[in-house]
Every structure is written in C-alpha cells, then in structure tokens.
Image (cartoon, rainbow, N blue to C red; front, side):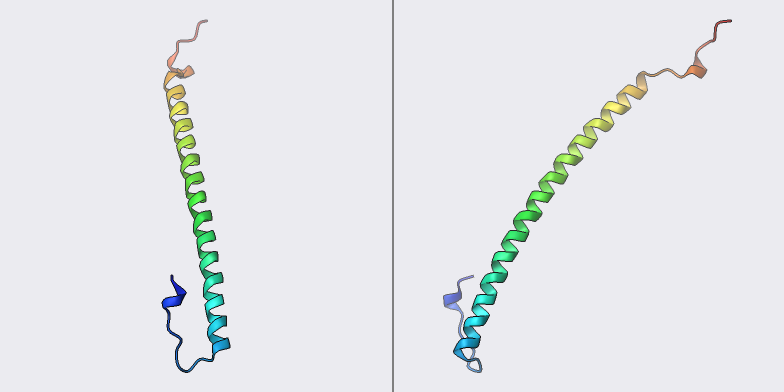
Length: 76
C-alpha cells in the first residue's frame, strides 16, 4: 500500500498520524514474513505428503507379494 496516497484524518495530530503510518509499515512487514513462512510450510507439507504417499504405495506393493502362512500347506 502506498502510504503517500493516504490522507490524514482531520481529527488526528501529525504525531499520531506518523505513529499510525509506522504501525502500518511494521504490520505490513510482519504479514509478508508470516505469509512467506506459511508458503514455505505448505511446500514442506506437500513434500512430506508426497513422500508418505510413495512409502504407502511401496508398503502396499510389498503386502501384495507376501503369502499368508494360512494359505500354505504345511509339510508333516
């Protein structure tokens, strides 16, 4: 947001208006940092999800190859 385009309300003093603009600047930076952290976390979670899905598929494939002892005939 371009702060130079904002108009100071008539009921505010110059010092209060400057404090408000500084507060908006600080809050804007915090929002940007939080959003960047959020995007990073989303990417990490997506990578973790892909890895878990691949591992799940591997386990399912391995389970399909295992034969149950109950289906085998036991030798005397």
